[in-house]
Length: 400
Figure 1 (cartoon, rainbow, N blue to C red):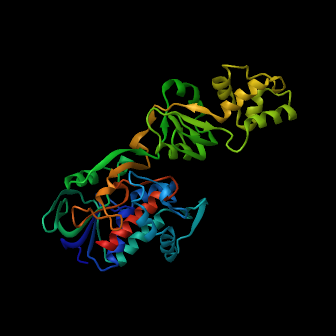
Figure 2 (figure 1 turned 180 degrees about the vertical axis):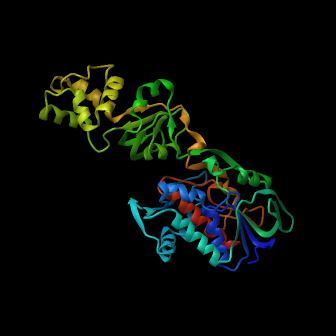
Figure 3 (figure 1 turned 90 degrees about the vertical axis):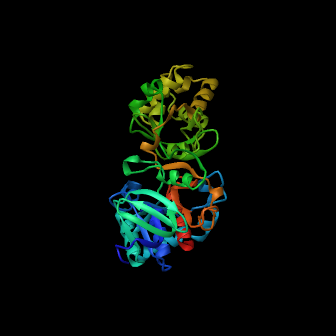
């Protein structure tokens, strides 16, 4: 394609996962496609994802793994473009991958492989990509006209794939939401998702010295629970369990943590009385967790009703029940989250009631499509958000 052209069938705003997949899908159908990316390179969020290995999809992807005011909206796209479709693309490019957790697929080498694959597919589909290109205005008469830092462009179909507000240091902005409002679309309330919790100063003064300590737990708030690792930080609580829970947690809710998700704590105490009756409760806990955690747990959670240095043989049945209750229900009261600075995703977004679930086109604005994170569809941790990007982008690319 002539790189100096200003006239296109399709212009895609955003060179991330959703935008690039849409470009490939549309370009392979013979559409003249331009991708406009304000950053200096495409796929920046892909490159930093998964610790640099990119958790590019999840084989267990299902509608239940997504949060939306309209939980049925994602069903069509997920059915039409499956994880195996993306795996087939990865395999065609001979990119080695592995399954790290149940269904979670990562690159063996680097997330750069995924970006290189997408760039190659765009090239093969004759997609024009302009980086470092800022959009100044968007107008629509019969066609769309974009004024940018690289000049004016015109198109029949405009695809908004600008992402959400998460990780502003990567260049995240609310441009897509502002554009949606410009064309009369509702944007549902936005907040950070898949983000660490912060704890108030009093709680931090007790738990912060455990920063870097990880525990296998079952964590739950009032609406959801997750069995994953929890990580103490110098600001509060993180790790997969807390990131997952943050997308469902509402301000003011407490978090309950089960420290023995696969065991009965009362039975564990009975075994301690039988096997090591002369050890102290503190030492028994240190053997099952760590000395650092056992000390803080004893002094902060148990000291109110017993001496943690009591030998286990001398514990009363009532005390054992109280100890077991604390082990299965350690309570934290977050005072918030770390916000968009460290959030992996943005909850909320363009109201899906205004869009076609099959094509991602705005019902009231012919030619306007919205895909990926800018839309009110947010996945859980584990490759689901990338798959929503691939699926929504592919579907839009088939319709533009």
